[in-house]
Image (tube, rainbow, N blue to C red):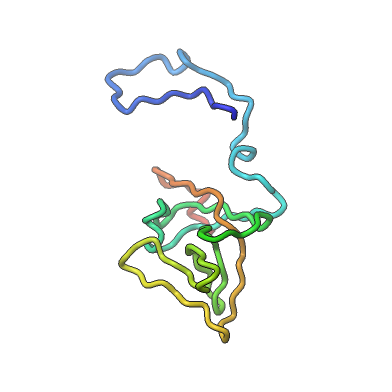
Amino acid sequence: MKFIPITASAGITGFESPASDYLQLPLSLDALLVEHPSATFIGKADGHSMQGVGIFSGDILIVDRHVTVKEGDVIVANLNGEFICKILHIAQRLLASANVKYKDIAINEEDQFTIEGVVIRSIRCHRASQLLAVNI
């Protein structure tokens, strides 16, 4: 296991020189976040149904189509023409929300259903980004 040598403190009491602990990591965010570049797409979460697994409205979702889908994975699916992000329960043919305020969705025989990929990462932006203002 590789460790990234970064430390952070929430109890900041003063400001040190920005260069005092500067480390240049031999790692890019692309390499850290995307495992299969040719099979990965990025989406933006909309809504509150996945808060129980730490996905909030406006979060960026990194979705991998190469990963084999497993029971309990958070997935992006197309259900009857609508993209949704839910927890997959394969045997029950159920798409579960991670927020008790939202109902689970049964996948019926007449539904048009495709799994678009597995959510392998989510990113929360704490400041608005001009890049994200363009509809992702």
